[in-house]
Amino acid sequence: MIRSATPDDLPLVRELFREFCDEIPDERWRDDDGEDDLRSLEAAVGEGRVLLDDDVGIAALRKTGQRVAELELLHVRAAARRSGVAGALVQEAASRLRDQGVEVLELSVLTRNEDARSAYERLGFTPVELRLAARVESLLDLGGGGPTFGSVHVQTDDTGAVERAAQKALPRLGRSAGTAVSGPRNGWVAVHDELCDREPKLLQRLGRELSYALAAVVLAIGVEEGALVRYTLYDRGGAVDEYASVPEYYGELPPGDVVALGANPTVVSRLTGAEPSRVREVARTARAPGELPPAAELVEAIAETMGVAEAGHGWVPS
Image 1 (cartoon, rainbow, N blue to C red):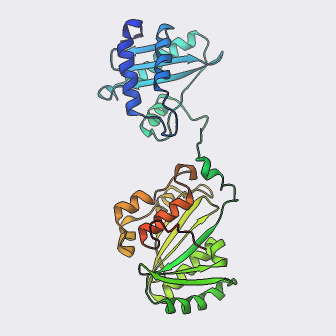
Image 2 (tube, rainbow, N blue to C red; image 1 turned 135 degrees about the horizontal axis):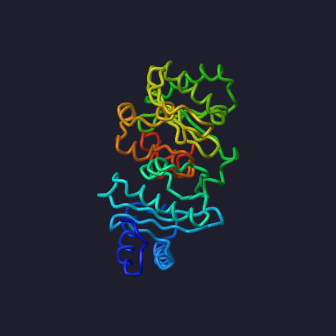
Image 3 (tube, rainbow, N blue to C red; image 1 turned 90 degrees about the vertical axis):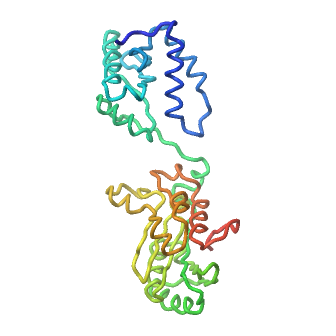
């Protein structure tokens, strides 16, 4: 039975609130304001703005305008979910708010809380605003002003063979003045080319051509606009794994394409010897650069995982 919470219910209100906070922690960069929120909730009890459904569900309301209110809190204990408690609390809230002249009820939900988002949409809520977040450090390199760089790594100890293959391939790509072949290191020979360094598509083409010419495993890896990390693994000229840290950085993609641009730990392990668990940990994808470590750090971590860089060497292709 739904009723307004009273001061006698404060122990239960506190218990339900802390249960909610433990289950859905706030983003890690935000200050811990749980105690402030709890005090506000306790004040809302005294103002008749908190609803309880027995001891399994709670809702807190607040008018934010003449015709709009906010559902500040909605929580149902796990054992009572999918039994209609959330819907009943929302309906009771809507009934009371309508009597106060409210026409629209709003709420906020974390993007990563997919279960709650689905539940709210089933109740009739629809998205009207999207709150975005980004690391300040990553924003310093955004907007096309960040650095674009990359390199190609051939799995071989034969530096001479790589030099000869690069000399044949690069003129077809519009060879620039500066090309360097270095190594081997950890069983990889690195190719840095001035033109391919700033043109990601040419970097990928160079990787494919060297893989085909040398019948070798080749990694083309780099950073685009200081924000996107991309790599492609080739084996005998064929692309066997493609990764983009932010698959939709340049625009929306079909869901299948987004999935395809995630790292394949099994393939990476087979071709480079990297630990699959480490690949899963490091080569993550996100919807925006700010959800990941800075691109320069991310590309270094991936390169180190695959063995083309060593910890502490500050891997930055040149």
